Length: 216
Image (cartoon, rainbow, N blue to C red; front, side, top):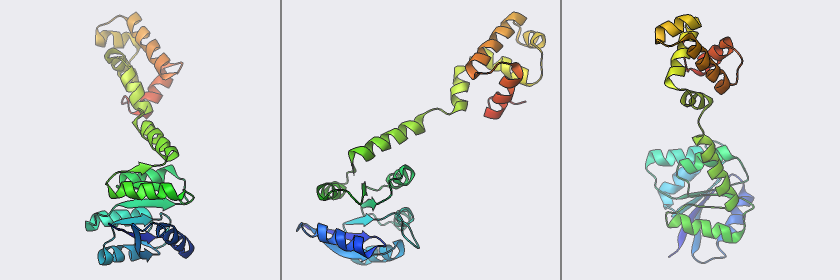
C-alpha cells in the first residue's frame, strides 16, 4: 500500500529534491507540496496524506506552529520534522508535540525511508546522535534546581535554625526557641554554611532568601 506524503518546505529546490528521492521507491507517493504552514493545513484537509515531512523554519506559520494547529484542529497525521537546524530546543519542542522523527536535511536516503516507515507504524525513530541529545536534554531537565538541591540537603533542624536566623534571631535566642543548646545552634549553622558554600550567617540567609528556602 502506498504511503501518501505531503512535503512542507518553503524552498522549492528542497521539495523537488525530496520528491525525487521518495519516488525512487514505489511505495512512497508525494501527493502535495506546501511552502508554509497555512498552505500545509489546507492541503492536509483536502488530500489527507498518510504522513507529513515538515520543515521548521517557514514564513507565516513555522513547523512547530503548524503541528500545534494540527492538534487544535484534530488532524491526526504523523509528522516527521526535516530541517537544517540542529537546535535541541526546537527538536525537543517538536517531539513533545508528537512529531514521529527529526531528521537533518543532509540525512541519507535509507535513514529517511526508515524514519518514514517507523512513523507510519506509529513509532518514533531518531538518528543515534539526535537520540543521545534527547536523552541528555531529558536528564538535564530532571536535574534538581539549586533550590531543590539545597532544600533537600538540609535537615529539619537546620531549616528551623536557618529560618530563625533569617528573622534576625541571635544564636542564644534560637537556642531558647528550639530548646537546644547554643553550641548546637552554631553546629547547625556550620552545616548550613558548608552545604551552601558560604562563610557567614548573613551570606547563608541572603542566599536562602534568594532561593526561596526561607522568608526574611
